[in-house]
Image (cartoon, rainbow, N blue to C red; front, top):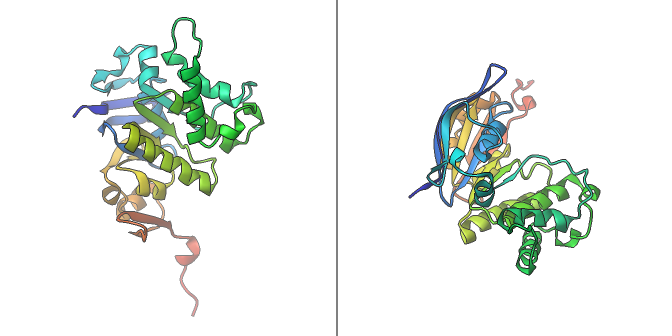
Length: 268
């Protein structure tokens, strides 16, 4: 089966500082693929390379069996949607207008949306729980609401591959679960490949089919959650004490931070 994303010997540096080195992996089509790692490990840079915002300095990337650079900008936009960590929200578009922007890669020469495009936007807003905000201006919304609007825009784009950078970071607990459940639903019902960067190891454990662990720009672990979320490996990469046990909710690991007070000698 063709991989949705294939990366071979990928390398990138900024001002002579290596950010990614000799990175190779493949994302199966229809997979929920989560990228984890400490701050500065190269996660966001990797995502920007995958979406074409940065050009690889070494190595290559293929999307659906075709080199990334061989896709036109329009073809990329019809294939992939990208939700960054944050998007400037100073422009005074309404939520519905922002979500409809996701239809741009599919419109004709005149760039005019039709009734079908509007219905797709309404469906996307309902899925992302922002339909009640349709007439509000984006710059009037909270950070979490804005994030859900951009997720709705990505859904409206109807991509084959959806890339998200920390999509739950600005969300409350209820909306974190709602967004993750939505990603799972898009994968299951529409066959969309989900590639997500996350700092939340427990969300990754619950939802990911495959996890890629980065350490200083290099591959430190790749596989199902039970294989990658190993306490010895995580302690080595993150440099802090951790406890990993079995989640009571299912057959996947659960990661706990160990506060310093529990490491101190007990007074007698």
